[in-house]
Image 1 (cartoon, rainbow, N blue to C red):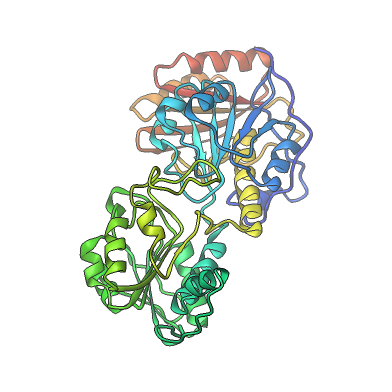
Image 2 (tube, rainbow, N blue to C red; image 1 turned 90 degrees about the vertical axis):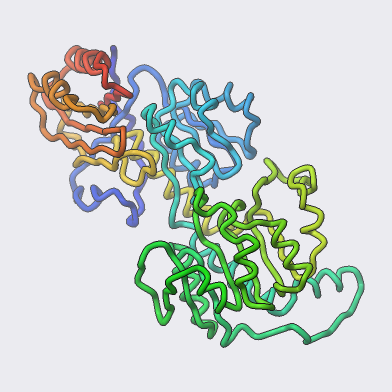
Length: 450
């Protein structure tokens, strides 16, 4: 096993990074580690990942293959076989079938908030870390919701469509100011809390429902039940993850509980709303309007695909009055995509080069103090293993004959993650360490960074 030195290129880190080591480094030169000895890091980026992210990865000397679109499953299986890193957005489905073919894959970057398009459990059990961007597009989504609240209250979509067709229809009936109205937020996370602040600035009263008790911002108030929120809010907006508990969270019963003449907005996940039920309540005039940015089934690319062939109710939905339909663009701003590109790419670089798993959604979060350029004969060992009794004893029997400068470990469910820095080693010692760790029955993945 031959080992080569790390590349000299590096990229400046975001001060908002979860990696605490940028506070530690000061003026000390940090060593950028290289995880593979005989081959370059191969990265496949799909779905038009932002240029900021591509630049960060290319600056590391990685081989970056970039595509603007997602890939069909069969083509994806072929392309993923020899890559070490894959970056996707929301359309690419990394199922167990696809990941089973990814023999070299060590990490997945989701350049978006959600990770439901990845079988994260399968990935963890095979030592593949998954990172996402939980914060970077929160402001963009919050802003589009505010825009939709105003557009629905003033029926702007219908008036615009009519005038595009040559019809002048100046009306005020059923059009409202949003000042003094009540906004009900379901899910008070990064997006919901930002939206809360913006809505209050517009003069709205804000209430929210969440499954955990949270500190309200401003004068917002948490309500104890979803039914309470639905019965009091003029505008209801959903900001929840895709979980079995949130599937059809807003269905026929919940529509009955909503105020007559209220509005519904969903920019979270397409499975949250029972859309056939929404169509019925819109036709009955129970709701005055709705805005949807996400759907149970979404096209794999741009084009004339939003038809009944995709979702059986698509054409009925399109026929409704005062309904805003957008193609999953809540976080699609230049600012958000740039920030996502930086956040996820930096996390990928830290994981590939240093083994830092802080921010991983499916792995124990582990990090060690950086190695310096002066520590030439040091190696970082990463041992991802099944979380079973007796592993640490066997690992330390292997490491115990050497000078272990520092070591840390953590577990998450059935998977554990161990990192250790060892000094005064040469290539033959490193090769021996690697082979002996690989031979343990608890092994999921062994990585040697040098």
